[in-house]
Image (tube, rainbow, N blue to C red; front, side, top):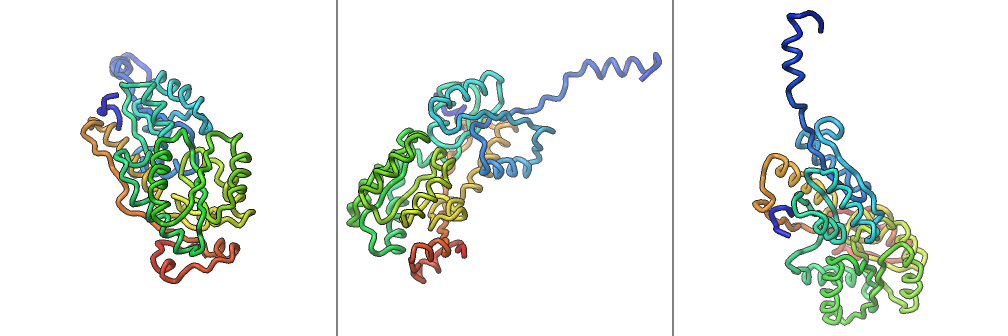
Length: 302
């Protein structure tokens, strides 16, 4: 697909003016398409409001649900295209792929699809080093990811290189749909990891509490990509601010609706990563977070 779409009275005297006004075309309200609305989209809607767009007033948002299921993403994308909407905004590689396959005419704003240039090794290495600093005895790391997410595949490839460099052992724990969670959890426990890494895949995010409950029940320290997981009870996270990414996505929609050509808009990548630590969770896991790691944290939840 070409990049330019990749990046939503009464009396005779009064009758004439009334008729003239009636012939004017109605004001057209731009329509934006969104797949799989969830709380993080509130940041996107706030970003729109910052630019003066008010839902159901001067902008309309069409929502379609795929519940994070790959086989339903294509149908959701086709429905948005058939409306049609002016811009489609998605998060994650599976949804991005589904929309790109459904249209080559409607601009697409993709949020949180990873690094398209595959420059993720340094970030993967940093996450592992932070995890080992927090848990000095870590030796076996379970990686919870979605094989249908290209960004997750890139993350896995980077980990395969980074893990041996740190003397660690990696256990792949793929989850494609909601039915695979229990089987994957059982397989993870058989490998007896002493830490876990969890991606920010939309499917895993939809089952956030399920994953946090699993690692807590089995006293498995886990690191996440987004601080929202730590606020929900996770141990620590290292990654870009998800709300900030969605607010920035709103700025792309604004520029497209104002007439900017998607091909002229640069692909933005996160430049600042945040470290967030939950001390309450650390205490529950009998972990003592090193003072230097606490000092380096952008946010500490107590």
